[in-house]
Amino acid sequence: MKKCLIILTTLFCFNSVHSQVLYNETFSGYTLGNLGTDYTGVVPGQGGWLTYITGANTPVSNNYSKITNEANKGNVLTLNGGTVVQTEVGLIAKKIDINTLINQRTPGNNVIKFEIDYYTGAQQPTATYGNRIILGDNATGNILVAANQLIDYSFHARYGYLRALGKDLTKNIKLDKNASPNSVLPFNTWVTFIVYLDYNNKKAYFETPYFNTIAVADFLKNSTSTNLIEDFKPTVLAFWYITKNETTTFDMVNKYDSIKITALKNVPAYILNTENFLATKFNMYPNPATNVVNITNNENMHVQQVTIYDIAGKQLTTQTFNNETQIQLNVESLAGGTYMLHLQTNEGTAVKKLVKK
Image (cartoon, rainbow, N blue to C red; front, side):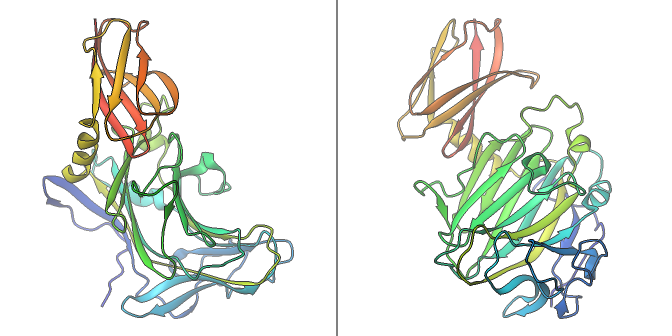
């Protein structure tokens, strides 16, 4: 039987990584039926969730967000719009005050792990809409605005495309490294999303068990804050199901379960090893360098951007490339010293150390 823990649990240690489960929601203690009692998103429903709908011609009802029973999982949260023909209809379920949970972490546990089980629903052959899973840092703002999103998973109900975006990430992160060009999930399938937000090192690690991959990206790379986790603290978790310019009927159903937020002292070693392994695929010469550095690889990895940091972690400069497998990087303007080069590629971020003469 599933248990619902919505309070801080006991500190424990595994694999030398201190871990605190701050939020663990499985909906097992909820009553089957409507999740909310107010479709305007003002009065909290079960578990403190806010539910509301958008769309000028959308019928108002509390029936769009429900607690349902799922075989082999128990209770789950379901967004079900039924058969609709409206344009720009949005169904929203939102959990706020996540920041109060983050505040309970042990000082120094500045890696936030977010994980969730998601059901992709049936394919909609003519639809141009999708589902969004958003972890944001502005509970009162428009969660569809990129500036309010720390992490944004988006799933397309027609093509099965999956993308991951986030605050100051370079671009859409490719979660399935073997896909070309888009990561694709099957329909009517439960999948798990896991992301580690490393506030100490400005990194985001996306673990997707369905693809058996880990993708790495810069996180908050444009911020000059000296206390990132306080200035960009998770405050809201939102599920947003939205239609766009629909002219035919469709039945939109998405489900969510096993939501967990954990505070860690460090990113687990097996996650970091993926990044280190990616770096070994690149050759960089000459090193030490004077004016120009050549960066090559033999595995057809495309470089989109190179960001240079000094040894203290301060971002110095960024150069953009057109998905090139071999690049020449001008470092003539750098002072003598040691630098870290973050190579944003189609498979994640590789970090290489450069010595400038």
